[in-house]
Image (cartoon, each protein chain N blue to C red):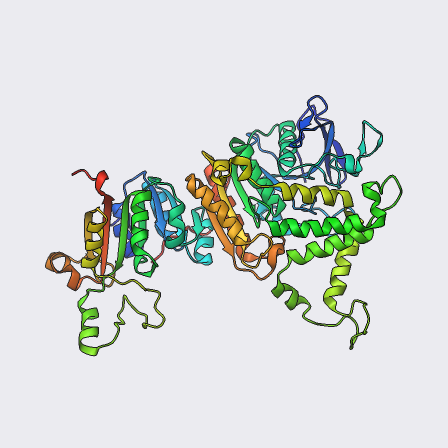
Length: 211
Length: 400
């Protein structure tokens, strides 16, 4: 529904598409609440947010959204199990202290989790290390090693491995290019770990899955 | 300001506020077990109550505040403590909301307190006034709303002790609170806060003019003790950074030390001024009773030891606000409230405002604070079906 998703940042459009109408959503790292506001208006979603920056929280609250200042590492544990239909973590997993705990908490709190992160398996990243012998600095990973907030990088394959070990079902996986657009064909499927700059996943708990 | 007066009430119109008698037929049962009534409650209103009676905002004042939110203080003549927030088109928009603020039980600005005459004895209450709690203050406010014919408040808002009352409202009368904004507050008074209050109380008690609380009968007043209490308290309302910015080590009207104990430093002079002006407008025994009420406040203990129990099933929309340099009610206390609210899946927003102005920031011009306050109120108003202010576009609308 490209028309219905107009005006939303391109990487948020795909996330919005994964959310069912009328559901309860927790957006972790929600920024100024753009996604929550869109979901509230167009999909009748009851949304809550967590955001680290005062400016982000202040902007979101000033637009009538329910957002708390906090972060994924410290605040998720205080939410009760099953409180949400979807818990969203966009481009933040690699910046958390304990990604495994965060992921577990997301699927404890929500029936579904929607996670996106930069893919450290992308060929440019690999070539940086292989050919230059230096830590990769790319468009999606724009920080030098000494100042990056990204402390827990993983590849798409790493992430899938973690999901398996946590009994998490991958319902959908989408490979994205640097602009957040979907990669199609072989680059987005079998070779996603080599050609995707970002991975986007719709996850659910094993006991909740239809199969 | 225009006010719709409910019929059949005995309102005594004060030039700057109302006062009403409550509890003559049905005294108020206090937490200490005593019954009190009839009592007088002084209050002020701004704006007009709508036909549905759905636009009322209760403003809860802090320890030494009063109901003159946006009026000149009758004694000091200074502008109301939230003067800049109240008015047509302002955050607390008198074109859209009906604002109510009442002087707390135990206060000294018109609501029954230890300075008043006990009708049973014909003498001032003094220390025979029952010890009150935050819960008692809120119970009296609820009686006032009953008398005004307001079943549900659109919002309860308050900072510091006003925030304690806000939290107490949500715990005691959840169905009567649509939205709540506890600011720079805590669900319990910390040991450090109790300690500072005790310093203030001991300063008052050490003043011979306190006369064991009986100073009114003896025609005296513990000016020095109350002033010292205020000075100690005032330090806790400021941050080190704010004190340094304001005064540094600057000397007061002199170039050198006096090598004596005059107010050499500006900060000393400032504190002495704060103390000496405070005694003109506040009652020493009221200070004892109200600080005690804050000390006793512990919403978790009152709910089986778990703060979340205080809010289980709450229908209220919360916006919790703290200030980064507030060491009297630090952000960790607000976070504890937020975590308890999250634990019961309540609808809560929370922001820590970056400010170097300390606890007093909630009374000062802090643009981010005001933006959050106004934005939350506006969003809540929309959910309540009240008119919204004309706003900018929401995020996500028209972004590239």
